[in-house]
Image (cartoon, one colour):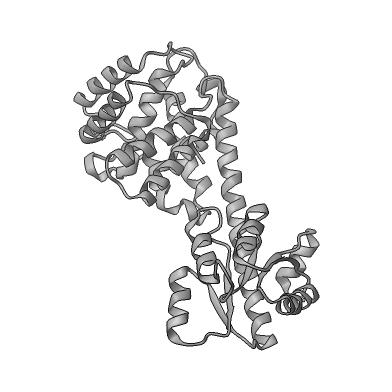
Length: 339
């Protein structure tokens, strides 16, 4: 048996394959093959049934006929690959069409592989195993990412002074990135870094975090380690690599007085400068052990004063203030705003 299947079955997991074909005999043939390989099979006989089957429960692989009445395989594939929730499901187009133009259409629709009818069993088996293996690895990475996000959010919600802080910073950061005209992929990375920017505080002494009076030099040095710890926690995960520097450097100041690296001006990663402003703003409008919360307008005034002292990137502060002014200084973040 395939090692991936052995691992899945040892964990009582059966990879699910959706077979889509308007010919019942073809579906039954593929069902018999897949069942013998240890997979669970979902069946659909047209494009509309296929979309509904995916909505009801995302499969790990889709074997998709091309020529079907109504919604053909190209359209099904195109719709699946255009949606965030389904774009990573591998799609194998099984078709009697074998000219270059047909394959190009499939590639443009987002198909991951092609099998020509009548298919050769060894070839189909090999390709199915390969794509299921890829899907399982992606699922493991997604699970690791979700665990990390859950840990960061739980860390926030268990602290009465930072309840929801990371989610708010993530949303301020994402909206600010959009306001600055950054591409959607960068907006998403800034949002992710906002969620995870304080995850290193899991290793910070809570008595120091909640101390109601001024910190000693030693205590402040301890606090300053959390961006470094956060970077180390996120470093093993590939999805976090584009924004590790944002997590590490979100406490840098534009004049070089920040930590942990004392970076100056535009040497500070752009995403770090965005999250730094969002982080400072949210800290000001929420209560902390050492002071009361303030209004959004008063917080903006403080941030403008600190910008004159050289704390923050003036361009980013101007954009942030413009964004808040457009919102009438409304700072509520809907629960569904992040993730």
